[in-house]
Amino acid sequence: LTTARREFAANADWLTFCRSAADIRTAVEAGKAAALLSVEGAELLPDRPDALDYVYDAGVRLITLTWNYRSRYGCSSAVDQNEGLTELGKQLVRDCDEKGIIVDVSHLSDRGFWDVCEATDRPFVATHSDSRVLCRNSRNLTDEQFRALCQLGGTAGLNLYSPFLAEQRRATFSDIAR
Image (cartoon, rainbow, N blue to C red; front, side, top):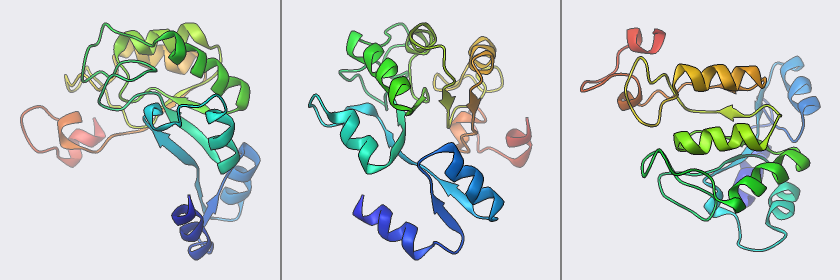
């Protein structure tokens, strides 16, 4: 957190640390990049009752539920697509909704994705997940998942790592455009 704050201050001429949608709008209107603090892999949250309050107060506004492993919150797509969120993970989704922290389903198993859909009616994101139709990587989303994400008002960002864009070769600009 100290490093992030130092970097935000050192780059304030072009970068704005945002804690709300209003902060993002202000940054964009000023012609600056908007940045949110995030946790990639909820297993990094402290194992204590006030963990979400702690990270929220520090400025975190986005949490990726899993990374490449199974955790107390759920299962990664790298481990088992049929194993979803734990009860603690489902509660984390509801608590994030209540606090105003965006849930990120990148890295999450297929079952976990649908568990998020069942646990919330709020928008969520897949910050770095590509199309499984175009590249059959288990980290990528299916068309059905993209539709569900959009129906809840969420959004997805691209992952520019070759194995998520093209099978068995280095990705090209054409792969990114697809």
